[in-house]
Image 1 (cartoon, rainbow, N blue to C red):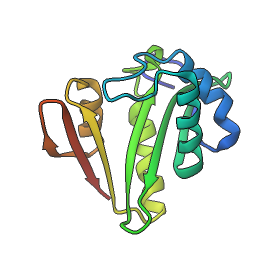
Image 2 (image 1 turned 180 degrees about the vertical axis):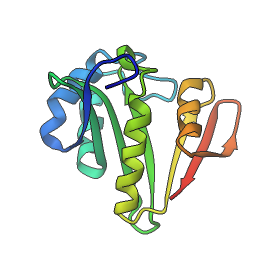
Image 3 (image 1 turned 90 degrees about the vertical axis):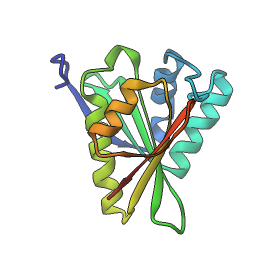
Image 4 (image 1 turned 120 degrees about the vertical axis):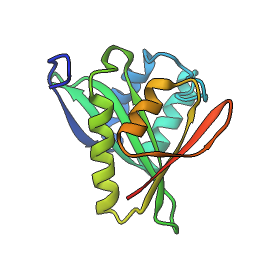
Length: 154
């Protein structure tokens, strides 16, 4: 249950989740976000999601009816035991604890895979995301007027 009493569950995602992920991103706001993700064009967004599903470790948060309401991905670097982290929660389900649980599960999976560090880049105006990252253990590496680079040692 999320903080608002709505049931949901977290699942690993592969290419079979492409269509329901695209359904979530088709009505995602803002699109594009401050850093250009998710991409604004439908074709570009489909290619981006497919690429994440092929190259990354993906998790989705789904309602009890199977609708995807959140997506996160770990994009491991091949030789450095680190991964880029990204997360997107549908606007109707933000501030309900879903991002926190997705991030905690992603951290567990990263540790299981031998990943030693997660890193991300977030817009400096995305205060809710920055609060989520700090709450789940990320620290600032570099802060500029436009972006914050954050990392988490596992």
